[in-house]
Image (tube, rainbow, N blue to C red; front, top):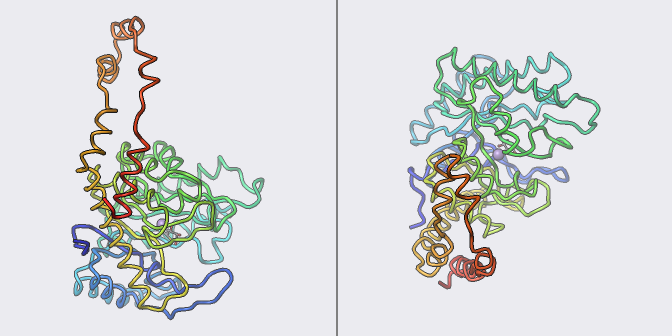
Length: 386
Ligand code: GLT
Ligand code: MN
């Protein structure tokens, strides 16, 4: 029942399972893993796809012939193992040249180099059949707030994304862009700190229909937000292209823990939203194994992410079939003619009618909603006693 299948569309970044356990206070605890080995292992454990940055696969200083050889080996591994590429992206944060940002660097040459690097990465993504190309601007931001004009930074980001949308169209690629928000880390403050900020920005672009978002659990929690609510707004806007799943404790550094290992209620609410809205995009795990693990622990981690999602999906179904829980939800869903009129659009007549209506304010105020019971039911489902 909890075995991943291709149609679940689970994927992992090369950078996630290849994470070597390095942190700001300590060296790597695991050896490197080759991309082709990762592809083989991911297929073995039942993932559908793999995600990558340009430099997860191709070293930043590779020659053209090295690049071609690496891509052809990787394509062969994908074909041999029946794995898809869920998304591709550009590393615009690791190299020292991006120390003050890529599209928002004060140095126009850095901004132009970033455009060049992204176009090359888009070419790689297109060659590998990636339907989505992600932008995560880890270095776009400041520590010193008066070092940049923040309105100018937004404008420069728009100029970059508009240019790159045109590049994709010009090349005839079948690729859409997805913007990923994070409030801070590695910069003191990162621009477009939440998925909500990204949604507002997308509406100002030349081709808004080409651009969506991929909220990440940990990033929204770092901003003290509710991920299920965030996902609700993205779904409503038809902008949830993919999602980055992981685990995170509130108010900490970016932990990127195994999905479902923290905040079980939050993870349940998120899965419940995705499942009840029949989300069709890929479910991408952007997390890594604890620093204590060897390679076997990495695959335990990866299996655990998928298994936890599938368990929570099953729990969501159980909740949807729980007569008592559904009864509580139904008893709170009270239909009202005035609201039906509001929902069907404004008319002077409706406005007049509503102004002249009497609503049973006291009864509405006094009615208990039974959310205590509802939450207990879900808790018992999650704890496995119901
Ligand atoms: C980086 C970051 C992730 C982004 C990746 C895409 S890289 O590890 O923490 O959230 O999704 O650039
Ligand atoms: Mn991510």
